[in-house]
Amino acid sequence: MNTLTCANPACTDALHADSDHVRVEAEKKRMRDRDETQEYYFHPECWTAVSASWEKPA
Ligand SMILES: [Zn+2]
Image 1 (cartoon, helix red, strand yellow):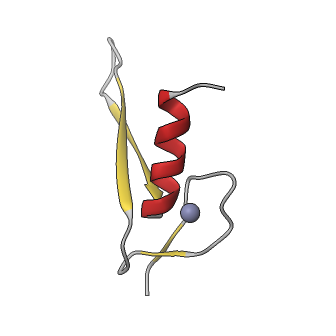
Image 2: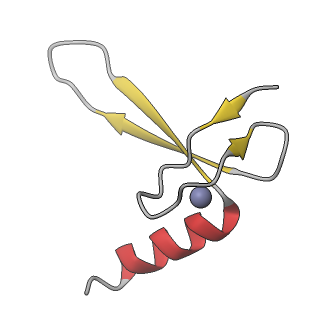
């Protein structure tokens, strides 16, 4: 079974690739080189918490 790492720093639970999860792609634009795509995985509830804090910075 494939295990992912949840990108929520507050989360320590295992994240399994065959259960519900959110994948986020962050593309790094580079002028002189190939673009790099970084992938992050979250539990659905962790993504909700993290994206809510992005929208409303403390
Ligand atoms: Zn999580």
